Amino acid sequence: MRTAIYTLTSELHNEQAVNAATQEFLDSLHLDCDFCGDDFSDYGHHSLDLIYVRTGGTEGIFLRLLPELLKMSDRPFRLLTSGKSNSLAASMEILSYLRQHHLQGEILHGSPQYISSRIHLLAKSEDARRSLKGTRLGVVGKPSDWLISSDVDAELVKQKFGIELVQLPLPTIEEAIDGGTDGAMRIYQHLQELVRNNQLQGFTIRCFDLLKTLHNTGCLALAKLNAEGIVAGCEGDVPALLSMAFANAITGVSGFQANPARIDPETGELLFAHCTIPLNMVERYDLDTHFESGIGVGIRGYMKPESVTIFKLAPDLSTHFVAEGQLVRNQAAPDLCRTQQVIQLDDPQQARYFLTRPIGSHHIIMPGQQKKVIEAILGEC
Image (cartoon, rainbow, N blue to C red):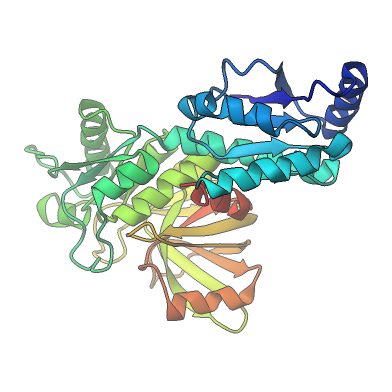
């Protein structure tokens, strides 16, 4: 989707001069956007709608438009201004009015570099937020018994993010499943069918039960499904699933659901491990057994060293953790879950979070520096 720019202009100002200043200002931003002028008929239908306050004396014009704009969109108002012709003063008056009436908004003003960067960030976060709305995520079986701090209110999730959580039983697999790769692929096929039959965009599964009933694991199935764009999480962990859905909406990959195995609170170096990782996140991978049970198929994935973001949404959706760092190496120690990543936090002090106020054990590792876009999305939800 695209960004649109709408304009507010006082009739008291010279139109030719205002148009010339507009062209100069927009050229400095280097934006690829739709310029809609004073025609607000399709307001709310773009990734980002900017109201360019071109002059002072436009407060009354905005006030007259406001009832219709509120019908068209429930997003915060973005007021773009160059500062010329008293436009900043008008924008401040408009934003003050909005806040008095408990409506959200922001003035985009500053250097061309700052404004352009902010617009790109807001457009990216809005695209991600819209992609989450209407998503159906399955909770297959109950959360694992050890996830004692991970209860989620499904109605709150729907209200806040527009995501529907669908409770489903574990799939009944009548035929025998062997403990090797062929059996793991049969589990993958059954989960594919579950996704298709229930029109899901993702799910989390109480996967450890498969060890008892089928003597195999869902690790390979989840790795493949995530690579196919289906957000697939482990152990029935719903907060982790929601965090993975965010990762997928922002980066196009579901992220690595893992828990810290070692933490150095002084240096900020962390070791994360788990037995599955989306296959589209790794440069190569090996097949091994599932670590805890020693049976089935686990994934030892090797992700290229790069910038990463660690993220976790709280079960009550009231807070979250996000930190940026560098994946410095992969390792393959035999006494841990098979995929192992050593991450150096950019801010070593954030390592204390894991030891003082962690949001559960599982966290999601996604590629790139995504903190700003995560904060932008959650700041508006």
